[in-house]
Length: 65
Image (cartoon, rainbow, N blue to C red; front, side, top):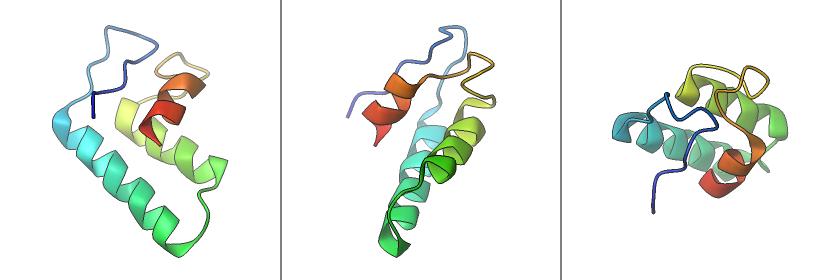
């Protein structure tokens, strides 16, 4: 799987952050359907910022899932 590109190319996604995000998404899905609020929380942690702040966008989150 290729790394998703951020909305802000100055922000890099480390392999560790990507693996952590995928693990968190998997854990969420194991217990219940993935809620948008849970995905947004994971994305904020992974990109160290919000979509509103330009750290990531919805396309990136959809590619990740």
